[in-house]
Length: 177
Image (cartoon, rainbow, N blue to C red; front, side, top):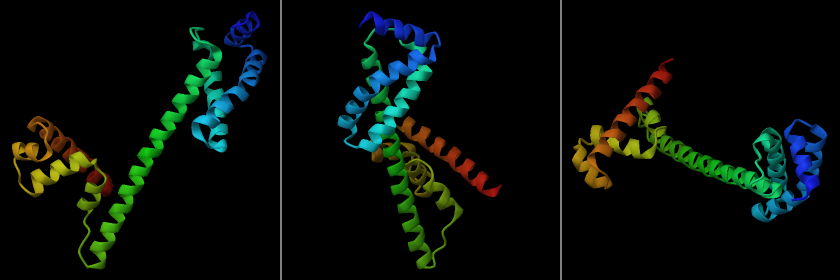
């Protein structure tokens, strides 16, 4: 890294806004081109590049020089992208589950079968807990039997049932308020 670059980084870390702006301007194109290749989406690449620059401004004092400045920016950008992908995956899973619940609810109601608050609350707890609660308290299986069915230790089953019941209590209490 050049002496000019090191001096600019040092000034930026000390709060020199113009030095920071110059650093960001010098690295933006490089970062954007990297993100285009990673995301294959120019709009997303632009958004992530901007988010990376914001994060850089917030964290410039933590840059320790153990890697090049451009590598540091790439690390930030890559982590932001990975976090976004995880969030999209969680949101897609949530939307799929919500669609499933709406579909089941519609089927129940179209056949004049009552959709209870309990079923609504059950739909909002994580699947491993929901399965354990249903097997234990609706179908009457023992913890050991559920463990065999789910291929997990009975202690894990107890934990899932307990967590699921706590979640249900919380859901049902919120519905009452």
